[in-house]
Image (cartoon, rainbow, N blue to C red; front, side, top):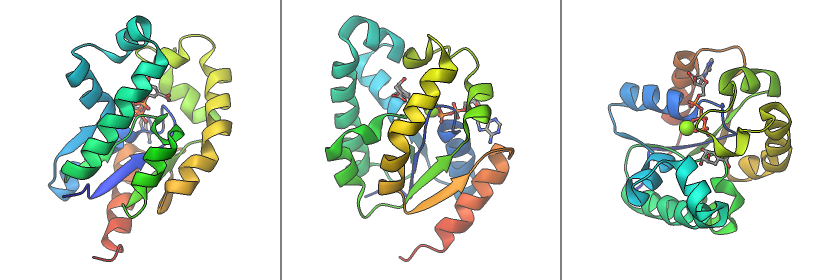
Length: 170
Ligand SMILES: Nc1ncnc2c1ncn2[C@@H]1O[C@H](COP(=O)(O)OP(=O)(O)OP(=O)(O)O)[C@@H](O)[C@H]1O
Ligand SMILES: O=C(O)C1=C[C@@H](O)[C@@H](O)[C@H](O)C1
Ligand SMILES: [Mg+2]
């Protein structure tokens, strides 16, 4: 069993929003490693960061991604920072991975004040720029496809991803 599609990208790329729409279109389940971590930990991500720290969150994230890649057969959205882990990048090889790209200006509009996103509570614009610069090469490394999302609706993005998946072998 393996996901039909794995979505990666920075916060605000639209992984959750587009992923849900894509799963509907494909008639498969949707899951989000952020939601899986919250189910396991029994508390929201901002609380995990506060109570246990980011390194503990990253441990939970590595385990959640590994579990989902081995056992989930729908559309899977990864947390924005999941690709930071070399083990996760290695596990993604061989999966259909779509990098949802977004420019800083659209991402800033989409995340607003960063509510619910513990890394973005102070100066979301500067932090997003840092995260994008740090992670863009990692998203590109794991991606089999890249889809631009700037100025496009989630439905339009989901349609393009669905079309790309139709071209994947097997
Ligand atoms: N293509 C789009 N156009 C406009 N708004 C969008 C688009 N995609 C997502 N949004 C909006 O941007 C916000 C963030 O989207 P979403 O939560 O799906 O991002 P994400 O990639 O899952 O972020 P995170 O990594 O923090 O989980 C939501 O309010 C969503 O409605
Ligand atoms: O970009 C990140 O590092 C994060 C993104 C979210 O999806 C969550 O996984 C968490 O808030 C950390
Ligand atoms: Mg999300």
